[in-house]
Image (cartoon, rainbow, N blue to C red; front, side, top):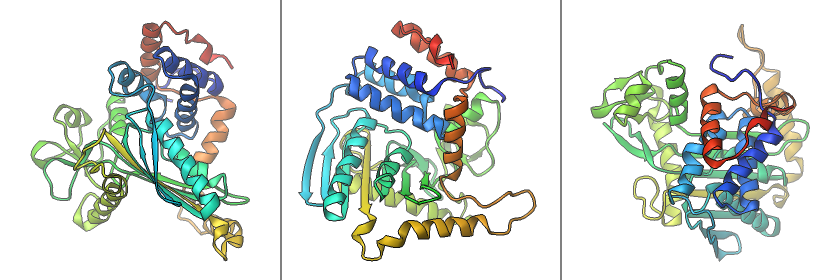
Length: 357
């Protein structure tokens, strides 16, 4: 694989290495282990843009420069038996978000559903992890998240709204779980970084530079603080739909939490929303997982055009990648390995063992 290190890394040893890195910057053991687990889980699922690629530059450096609180006092305020607002105290978003979904699951177990908004948080990685927490409890999980503004409005000249996440998870019986984890935009910044590292150009319609001119060079995007375009890219392709979903995420996360969201930020850098729905709280919920399996089998049986094997459900590729990488190791790009080496030297943390099978 082009630009990948020659050897794969052992997932369990990579997780221990990541946890040790957080502990070296004085993150408590439990929080370090949890954050390492969520980061490596993203790499195992093939969500490389949200895995250990961000360990050094985003999280370790964030703790070192004080933008991330290593020992937050996370406060949960209940608004009703099924709603909560959570102050993340600018802690690691992984820890805050895990606690938030745990609280939603607790409420849903007792009352059928649970909702939580989170403000004063930081980046929390891949949304898939949190909705899977609910799916493993035979619940539907929903998650939205927003950070800084990197996306232009349709027809706009510059950044306005966050590259907001919408994630949804649901359990199956033979198949699944179903996991949709997406930003309703043409790309995310880390995808542009990957193209930059590989010397590739962006497809047309992904981004604009200053004053709204279209660009395909990721170097120009970063040099000029360009803006990514909402999903659809143009009016003819339904860009208003992608932009509408971005606003939905901003409303659920930022406005409902009082944080203000990516456009009106008042508290911290990131806000989130979580929901858990207990399926058997519905009188008709008993057949849910059987119907999920039937839906997947209908997808798999759909005739396809030449060159397409079969129609896959959201989350299927990640599930298969998880099994393959758990058995064979995680491939890391060479530039990610180089960055981890620089971090390990700075932290006086041995790294060689992650290559051992």
